[in-house]
Length: 322
Image (cartoon, rainbow, N blue to C red; front, side, top):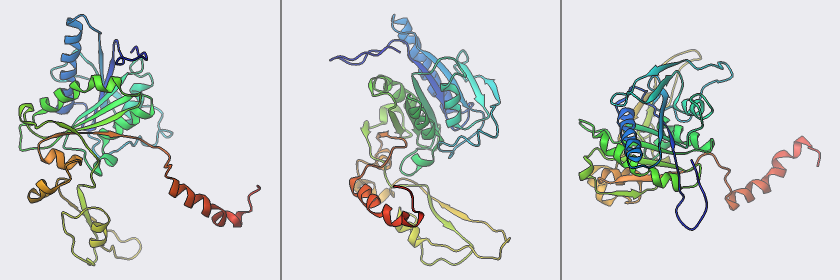
């Protein structure tokens, strides 16, 4: 990809796109995204424009909820793979790896499929990745991993509905965002969440903040509840209200039952929800786009001042040389 600085937009020639996901290389969302990318590449070439390249490197099985995990790569220094075929895009080079989404990106970015890709598109995930889910999502984890390798990335998710899933809505919006992603600073990560609606029925696309929403509302132990848990409650308040106890002697086994709900505001509260948050926007029929940032040192002056002032007392017993 060719970039140069100037007063006009960043220009690019051929773009190599690596496609991955966390639902597995045979998932319908990945197929829809790959088909849309093929259409984009064919249209570009037919118009005399750049010849874009698309390659699929994705887990061979479902890795939902894997985040940016790679596993113990020092214990196994090889990754098994199998050549795959993407439905409707059979001509695209595709591989299913015995690896997480993040490790699939690392392998694809560091030479397993030739030159380093210019962009990574991860998805289309079946189900949104909003709120706290962005921390745990394998779809988003793959995109954040690409960023750490100096590659801009887009994570794409479609709200799960009664079906059939309108995969093309998310795929078309994702492809439309490629020029924006190309122009953005290298290492940019965007997270796109799309309602389960035909494209013509989506109310638009808006920038979003990450909400406090999450799927897991409580973890029920074997003991008694200290207080009832309200399913719609989020954050620390929910943790306090849903405190449970695991009991037993050493060696005893049991189960923890997770209470799983919806990341969206209750239907009666949708109109009152924060209109800038990802979950609220998708619930109201908008596609939500969030810019994310991976691991970065916290530079908050108040926090750094507190830590710096307390380090002396915390470490005085160790008598480190000055």
